Amino acid sequence: LVSFILYQSDLADNIRTLIYIFGDMLNSVGAAGKVFEYLDREPQVSTKGTLQPETLTGHVHFNNLSFSYPTRQERKVLQGLSLELRPGQLTALVGPSGGGKSTCVSLLERFYQPQQGEILLDGQPLQSYQHHYLHRKVAMVGQEPVLFSGSIKDNIAYGLADCSLERVQEAARRANAHSFISQLEKGYDTDVGERGGQLSGGEKQRIAIARALIREPQVLILNEVTSALDTESEHMVQEALASCPSQTLLVIAHKLRTIERADQIILIDQGTVQEQGTHQELMDRKGSYYKLRERLFTEDDMSH
Ligand code: ATP
Image (tube, rainbow, N blue to C red; front, side, top):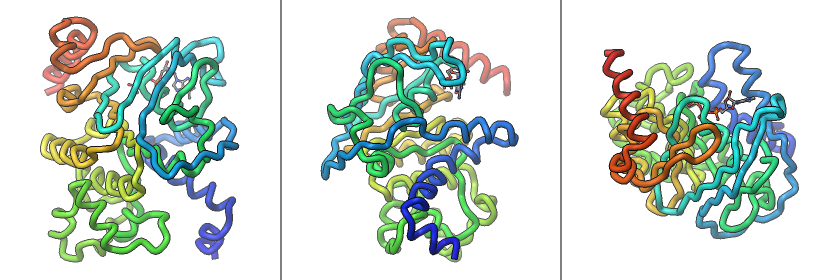
Protein backbone atom coordinates (compact mmCIF):
# COMPACT_ATOMS: atom_id res chain seq x y z
CA LEU A 1 0.00 0.00 0.00
CA VAL A 2 2.77 2.41 0.98
CA SER A 3 4.61 1.90 -2.27
CA PHE A 4 1.33 2.28 -4.20
CA ILE A 5 0.75 5.63 -2.51
CA LEU A 6 4.39 6.59 -3.04
CA TYR A 7 4.10 5.96 -6.74
CA GLN A 8 0.70 7.58 -7.23
CA SER A 9 0.51 10.90 -5.51
CA ASP A 10 2.18 14.20 -6.23
CA LEU A 11 3.03 14.61 -2.59
CA ALA A 12 4.75 11.25 -2.76
CA ASP A 13 6.59 12.41 -5.84
CA ASN A 14 8.04 15.23 -3.78
CA ILE A 15 8.90 12.84 -0.98
CA ARG A 16 10.60 10.46 -3.41
CA THR A 17 12.59 13.36 -4.84
CA LEU A 18 13.66 14.36 -1.35
CA ILE A 19 14.62 10.80 -0.45
CA TYR A 20 16.58 10.59 -3.65
CA ILE A 21 18.31 13.91 -3.09
CA PHE A 22 19.06 13.40 0.57
CA GLY A 23 19.72 9.67 0.43
CA ASP A 24 23.39 9.98 -0.39
CA MET A 25 23.89 12.68 2.17
CA LEU A 26 22.13 10.79 4.92
CA ASN A 27 24.34 7.82 4.39
CA SER A 28 27.47 9.91 4.54
CA VAL A 29 26.84 10.94 8.14
CA GLY A 30 26.75 8.66 11.12
CA ALA A 31 25.66 10.54 14.20
CA ALA A 32 21.99 11.36 14.66
CA GLY A 33 22.78 15.02 15.26
CA LYS A 34 24.44 15.21 11.88
CA VAL A 35 21.36 13.71 10.24
CA PHE A 36 19.26 16.60 11.52
CA GLU A 37 21.88 19.03 10.32
CA TYR A 38 21.44 17.59 6.83
CA LEU A 39 17.65 17.48 7.09
CA ASP A 40 17.83 21.20 7.75
CA ARG A 41 19.02 21.46 4.18
CA GLU A 42 15.53 20.96 2.77
CA PRO A 43 14.95 23.36 -0.08
CA GLN A 44 14.16 26.78 1.37
CA VAL A 45 13.40 28.21 -2.02
CA SER A 46 10.37 28.80 -4.16
CA THR A 47 9.42 25.98 -6.53
CA LYS A 48 7.30 28.00 -8.93
CA GLY A 49 9.55 27.78 -11.98
CA THR A 50 8.01 26.40 -15.17
CA LEU A 51 10.81 26.04 -17.75
CA GLN A 52 11.35 22.50 -19.05
CA PRO A 53 13.28 22.87 -22.30
CA GLU A 54 13.65 19.75 -24.41
CA THR A 55 17.32 20.34 -24.91
CA LEU A 56 19.67 21.68 -22.31
CA THR A 57 23.40 22.10 -22.82
CA GLY A 58 24.27 22.41 -19.12
CA HIS A 59 26.19 25.70 -19.27
CA VAL A 60 26.34 27.07 -15.73
CA HIS A 61 27.29 30.58 -14.59
CA PHE A 62 27.65 31.62 -10.96
CA ASN A 63 27.38 35.41 -11.14
CA ASN A 64 28.74 37.40 -8.22
CA LEU A 65 27.15 35.19 -5.53
CA SER A 66 27.05 36.25 -1.93
CA PHE A 67 25.48 33.93 0.60
CA SER A 68 24.97 33.45 4.34
CA TYR A 69 23.25 30.41 5.85
CA PRO A 70 19.87 31.28 7.43
CA THR A 71 21.14 30.11 10.82
CA ARG A 72 24.25 32.30 10.70
CA GLN A 73 23.25 35.38 8.80
CA GLU A 74 26.05 37.48 10.22
CA ARG A 75 28.67 35.35 8.44
CA LYS A 76 29.12 35.60 4.68
CA VAL A 77 30.09 32.13 3.48
CA LEU A 78 30.31 33.18 -0.19
CA GLN A 79 31.49 36.66 -1.07
CA GLY A 80 31.03 37.81 -4.66
CA LEU A 81 31.88 34.40 -6.12
CA SER A 82 31.77 33.99 -9.91
CA LEU A 83 32.60 30.90 -11.94
CA GLU A 84 31.60 29.10 -15.12
CA LEU A 85 31.03 25.39 -15.79
CA ARG A 86 31.07 24.42 -19.45
CA PRO A 87 29.38 21.49 -21.17
CA GLY A 88 31.75 18.69 -22.11
CA GLN A 89 34.27 19.83 -19.51
CA LEU A 90 35.33 18.52 -16.13
CA THR A 91 35.72 21.24 -13.51
CA ALA A 92 37.25 20.46 -10.14
CA LEU A 93 36.56 22.58 -7.07
CA VAL A 94 39.38 22.42 -4.58
CA GLY A 95 40.40 24.42 -1.55
CA PRO A 96 40.86 24.31 2.20
CA SER A 97 38.16 22.89 4.43
CA GLY A 98 35.37 25.40 5.11
CA GLY A 99 36.25 27.47 2.04
CA GLY A 100 32.77 27.15 0.51
CA LYS A 101 32.93 24.27 -2.02
CA SER A 102 29.92 22.32 -0.69
CA THR A 103 27.97 25.54 -0.32
CA CYS A 104 28.43 26.16 -4.05
CA VAL A 105 26.94 22.71 -4.73
CA SER A 106 24.02 23.32 -2.34
CA LEU A 107 23.19 26.51 -4.21
CA LEU A 108 23.46 24.76 -7.58
CA GLU A 109 21.02 22.15 -6.29
CA ARG A 110 18.75 24.96 -5.08
CA PHE A 111 18.69 23.98 -1.43
CA TYR A 112 19.18 27.67 -0.74
CA GLN A 113 18.79 30.96 -2.54
CA PRO A 114 21.78 33.32 -2.62
CA GLN A 115 21.14 36.74 -1.08
CA GLN A 116 23.01 38.43 -3.89
CA GLY A 117 23.88 37.42 -7.44
CA GLU A 118 22.40 34.51 -9.36
CA ILE A 119 23.10 31.15 -10.93
CA LEU A 120 22.25 30.82 -14.61
CA LEU A 121 21.68 27.50 -16.38
CA ASP A 122 21.81 27.88 -20.15
CA GLY A 123 21.40 31.61 -19.59
CA GLN A 124 18.21 31.32 -17.49
CA PRO A 125 18.06 31.83 -13.71
CA LEU A 126 17.97 28.49 -11.90
CA GLN A 127 14.65 29.34 -10.19
CA SER A 128 12.87 29.71 -13.54
CA TYR A 129 13.17 25.94 -14.17
CA GLN A 130 10.48 23.49 -13.09
CA HIS A 131 11.55 21.87 -9.81
CA HIS A 132 11.53 18.16 -10.82
CA TYR A 133 13.00 18.95 -14.21
CA LEU A 134 15.92 20.70 -12.52
CA HIS A 135 16.56 17.80 -10.16
CA ARG A 136 16.60 15.37 -13.07
CA LYS A 137 18.99 17.52 -15.07
CA VAL A 138 21.33 18.40 -12.19
CA ALA A 139 22.33 15.19 -10.38
CA MET A 140 24.72 14.57 -7.55
CA VAL A 141 26.60 11.46 -6.42
CA GLY A 142 27.74 11.69 -2.81
CA GLN A 143 30.88 10.40 -1.18
CA GLU A 144 29.31 7.27 0.31
CA PRO A 145 26.29 6.46 -1.81
CA VAL A 146 23.25 4.77 -0.36
CA LEU A 147 22.47 1.33 -1.72
CA PHE A 148 19.26 -0.35 -0.71
CA SER A 149 18.80 -3.94 0.21
CA GLY A 150 17.63 -5.31 -3.14
CA SER A 151 19.05 -6.22 -6.54
CA ILE A 152 21.71 -4.25 -8.37
CA LYS A 153 19.18 -3.63 -11.15
CA ASP A 154 16.68 -2.11 -8.71
CA ASN A 155 19.39 0.00 -7.16
CA ILE A 156 20.32 1.49 -10.53
CA ALA A 157 16.71 1.91 -11.72
CA TYR A 158 15.65 3.27 -8.33
CA GLY A 159 12.46 5.33 -8.59
CA LEU A 160 12.05 4.87 -12.35
CA ALA A 161 8.91 2.99 -13.28
CA ASP A 162 9.15 0.25 -15.95
CA CYS A 163 12.85 0.54 -16.52
CA SER A 164 14.17 -2.15 -18.89
CA LEU A 165 17.24 -4.25 -18.16
CA GLU A 166 18.84 -2.93 -21.36
CA ARG A 167 18.55 0.63 -20.10
CA VAL A 168 20.07 -0.37 -16.75
CA GLN A 169 22.94 -2.16 -18.50
CA GLU A 170 23.62 0.81 -20.74
CA ALA A 171 23.93 3.11 -17.68
CA ALA A 172 26.14 0.53 -15.93
CA ARG A 173 28.42 0.33 -18.97
CA ARG A 174 28.88 4.09 -18.98
CA ALA A 175 29.61 4.02 -15.26
CA ASN A 176 32.16 1.28 -15.81
CA ALA A 177 30.16 -1.09 -13.63
CA HIS A 178 28.93 -3.57 -16.24
CA SER A 179 31.96 -5.85 -16.29
CA PHE A 180 32.13 -6.42 -12.52
CA ILE A 181 28.35 -6.90 -12.34
CA SER A 182 28.45 -9.45 -15.19
CA GLN A 183 31.07 -11.44 -13.33
CA LEU A 184 28.80 -11.90 -10.32
CA GLU A 185 26.99 -15.23 -10.24
CA LYS A 186 23.54 -13.60 -10.33
CA GLY A 187 24.59 -10.59 -12.40
CA TYR A 188 22.10 -7.71 -12.17
CA ASP A 189 19.88 -9.79 -9.86
CA THR A 190 22.58 -9.92 -7.19
CA ASP A 191 21.25 -8.69 -3.85
CA VAL A 192 23.61 -5.97 -2.72
CA GLY A 193 22.82 -6.68 0.92
CA GLU A 194 22.07 -4.24 3.65
CA ARG A 195 23.59 -0.90 2.60
CA GLY A 196 25.61 -2.55 -0.12
CA GLY A 197 27.75 -4.40 2.42
CA GLN A 198 28.78 -7.05 -0.10
CA LEU A 199 30.38 -4.59 -2.50
CA SER A 200 33.65 -2.67 -2.34
CA GLY A 201 33.65 1.11 -2.03
CA GLY A 202 34.56 1.51 -5.69
CA GLU A 203 31.81 -0.87 -6.84
CA LYS A 204 29.19 0.98 -4.80
CA GLN A 205 30.39 4.25 -6.21
CA ARG A 206 30.06 2.98 -9.77
CA ILE A 207 26.53 1.73 -9.11
CA ALA A 208 25.67 5.17 -7.74
CA ILE A 209 27.13 6.80 -10.85
CA ALA A 210 25.04 4.43 -13.02
CA ARG A 211 21.97 5.42 -10.98
CA ALA A 212 22.71 9.06 -11.72
CA LEU A 213 23.52 8.51 -15.42
CA ILE A 214 20.33 6.55 -16.15
CA ARG A 215 18.39 9.74 -15.47
CA GLU A 216 20.44 11.44 -18.20
CA PRO A 217 21.46 14.49 -16.19
CA GLN A 218 23.11 17.29 -18.11
CA VAL A 219 25.06 18.48 -15.07
CA LEU A 220 26.65 15.76 -12.93
CA ILE A 221 28.19 16.64 -9.58
CA LEU A 222 30.49 14.20 -7.83
CA ASN A 223 31.00 15.29 -4.26
CA GLU A 224 34.37 14.14 -2.95
CA VAL A 225 33.65 11.05 -4.93
CA THR A 226 37.12 9.59 -5.03
CA SER A 227 38.32 10.41 -1.54
CA ALA A 228 37.31 7.05 -0.05
CA LEU A 229 38.46 4.86 -2.90
CA ASP A 230 41.62 2.93 -3.58
CA THR A 231 43.78 3.70 -6.58
CA GLU A 232 42.23 1.12 -8.88
CA SER A 233 38.72 2.34 -8.12
CA GLU A 234 39.80 5.92 -8.60
CA HIS A 235 40.96 4.98 -12.05
CA MET A 236 37.64 3.31 -12.83
CA VAL A 237 35.71 6.37 -11.69
CA GLN A 238 37.90 8.56 -13.89
CA GLU A 239 37.03 6.35 -16.84
CA ALA A 240 33.35 6.55 -15.99
CA LEU A 241 33.67 10.32 -16.05
CA ALA A 242 35.31 10.13 -19.45
CA SER A 243 32.16 8.43 -20.74
CA CYS A 244 30.16 11.66 -20.30
CA PRO A 245 31.60 13.62 -23.23
CA SER A 246 28.81 16.18 -23.56
CA GLN A 247 27.82 16.63 -19.94
CA THR A 248 28.96 19.32 -17.55
CA LEU A 249 30.92 17.59 -14.81
CA LEU A 250 31.77 19.10 -11.45
CA VAL A 251 33.95 17.25 -8.97
CA ILE A 252 34.64 18.39 -5.44
CA ALA A 253 38.04 16.91 -4.84
CA HIS A 254 40.08 16.32 -1.74
CA LYS A 255 42.65 14.00 -3.28
CA LEU A 256 44.24 16.49 -5.61
CA ARG A 257 46.02 13.76 -7.54
CA THR A 258 42.73 12.61 -9.03
CA ILE A 259 41.86 15.88 -10.73
CA GLU A 260 45.08 16.69 -12.53
CA ARG A 261 43.41 16.00 -15.87
CA ALA A 262 40.46 18.32 -15.19
CA ASP A 263 39.79 20.92 -17.88
CA GLN A 264 39.78 23.58 -15.19
CA ILE A 265 40.57 23.63 -11.50
CA ILE A 266 38.97 26.30 -9.34
CA LEU A 267 40.40 26.97 -5.93
CA ILE A 268 37.86 28.38 -3.49
CA ASP A 269 38.95 29.89 -0.21
CA GLN A 270 37.04 32.17 2.17
CA GLY A 271 34.01 32.12 -0.08
CA THR A 272 35.65 33.39 -3.20
CA VAL A 273 37.60 32.11 -6.20
CA GLN A 274 41.28 32.46 -5.37
CA GLU A 275 42.78 30.82 -8.45
CA GLN A 276 41.68 28.99 -11.57
CA GLY A 277 43.34 27.28 -14.51
CA THR A 278 44.64 23.90 -15.57
CA HIS A 279 46.81 21.84 -13.26
CA GLN A 280 49.93 22.87 -15.16
CA GLU A 281 49.02 26.57 -15.19
CA LEU A 282 48.39 26.54 -11.46
CA MET A 283 51.58 24.61 -10.72
CA ASP A 284 53.62 27.09 -12.79
CA ARG A 285 52.06 29.97 -10.86
CA LYS A 286 53.29 28.49 -7.57
CA GLY A 287 50.38 30.14 -5.71
CA SER A 288 47.61 28.80 -3.45
CA TYR A 289 47.01 25.57 -5.43
CA TYR A 290 50.70 24.74 -5.40
CA LYS A 291 50.88 25.33 -1.64
CA LEU A 292 47.68 23.39 -0.94
CA ARG A 293 49.10 20.39 -2.83
CA GLU A 294 52.35 20.55 -0.92
CA ARG A 295 50.48 20.67 2.38
CA LEU A 296 48.05 17.85 1.55
CA PHE A 297 50.74 15.57 0.16
CA THR A 298 52.91 16.11 3.22
CA GLU A 299 49.94 15.24 5.45
CA ASP A 300 49.29 12.19 3.25
CA ASP A 301 52.89 10.99 3.58
CA MET A 302 52.84 11.51 7.33
CA SER A 303 49.68 9.42 7.66
CA HIS A 304 51.33 6.41 6.00
P1 ATP B 1 34.99 20.86 3.33
O1 ATP B 1 36.13 20.70 2.38
O2 ATP B 1 35.40 20.70 4.76
O3 ATP B 1 33.78 20.07 2.97
P2 ATP B 1 33.87 23.26 2.08
O4 ATP B 1 34.88 24.02 1.30
O5 ATP B 1 32.94 22.38 1.32
O6 ATP B 1 34.58 22.43 3.25
P3 ATP B 1 31.47 24.44 3.14
O7 ATP B 1 30.93 23.16 3.66
O8 ATP B 1 30.82 25.05 1.95
O9 ATP B 1 33.05 24.34 2.89
O10 ATP B 1 31.42 25.47 4.35
C1 ATP B 1 31.70 26.85 4.21
C2 ATP B 1 31.37 27.54 5.53
O11 ATP B 1 29.97 27.48 5.74
C3 ATP B 1 32.03 26.88 6.75
O12 ATP B 1 32.44 27.91 7.61
C4 ATP B 1 30.91 26.10 7.37
O13 ATP B 1 31.06 26.02 8.77
C5 ATP B 1 29.68 26.91 7.01
N1 ATP B 1 28.49 26.04 6.86
C6 ATP B 1 28.38 24.96 6.08
N2 ATP B 1 27.15 24.43 6.17
C7 ATP B 1 26.45 25.20 7.03
C8 ATP B 1 25.10 25.20 7.53
N3 ATP B 1 24.22 24.27 7.15
N4 ATP B 1 24.74 26.16 8.40
C9 ATP B 1 25.62 27.12 8.79
N5 ATP B 1 26.91 27.20 8.36
C10 ATP B 1 27.32 26.26 7.48
